[in-house]
Image 1 (cartoon, rainbow, N blue to C red):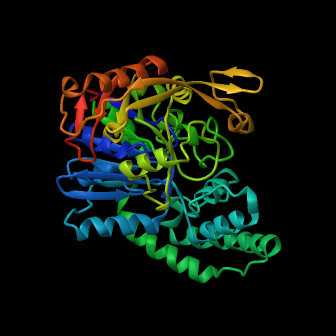
Image 2 (image 1 turned 90 degrees about the horizontal axis):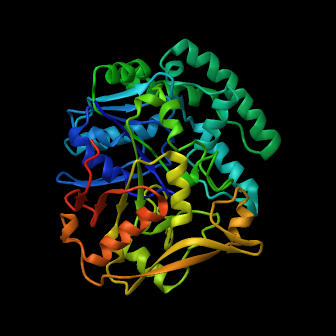
Image 3 (image 1 turned 135 degrees about the horizontal axis):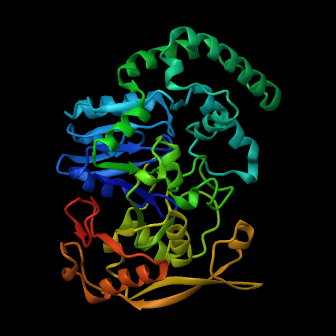
Length: 427
């Protein structure tokens, strides 16, 4: 039995889905434990290219039980759309379990998200407008509806009546917005509930029993450590905690159940939306990386900001999550460069910094201190073993490991799952 937590180590978009897809051949269960449809996992395998926002990667394999656990906020419309799209492509979804404790994203959450973002003006966060923040806010204020609530028609009617009334008071008094129709929200939610009810169960017991039975389990993180609401670059973060602590809170598994924590990086950094980014390349070099890496958001389609690898942030993520190993994705994106830079510290008006400050105003004024490494200037996409990589590429990956304090396990050199070099098996 092995339980592996796969954690994004940057600002998201590290191709965690590709790594989970590669590990899933040896897994019994794949579990999403936080976030919502603001996540985007893209997988390219022998069946084609799949972009999933809520369904775990395991749904592509009927042998695997895929779980949307209690820490996720579930947009039922998105889940149904993804199920229908997979079935249209000949992949029946029969192996899905949705936690009865998972909170639900409802139509008024998306309206609230839009109103709040418009109201922020110059302080906009760059939210995906998918209602994730308001859904988590309702969860914390105990006004949320869970899957177990919406599949019970009487409970749904009573709780929704109260919440819609509260939302309409908020929308009219604070934002001057038109009220929403209780009847329409009720009808729409009831339709979703009837469709998803067969998938809803007690996933806490399911997962605890699976671990007790010695099953192999992958805990699939969404977003990433630097977007963590507790430990990320606040306030330009997500509304959940994508670091490893949520792998327990969001599933009902105890910490000692997790055998291995794996951090997923790209060979460079990227970010969608606002917030400080010390190594950002807002120039022709950055545009080259963006085009070579196809750096456009899976969820939003927005161009991602890109920059050199930041070992200060990498070390922060590794220590925070206790990474046993790390993964480097998209190494091939750097194949063309004569010199490749790694940020090893920051210059600030107050002196040198070697850590992530809590105050993002401080981070915004940090200037990267770089260590320059020679590039390899030749294609790596055909490499399938560590020994196939150019010596300079090996040195680059190993140097990252030295700087962040843990060893590499996997390096990928292309989008397809076959473009994977395994140094240390993870499952």
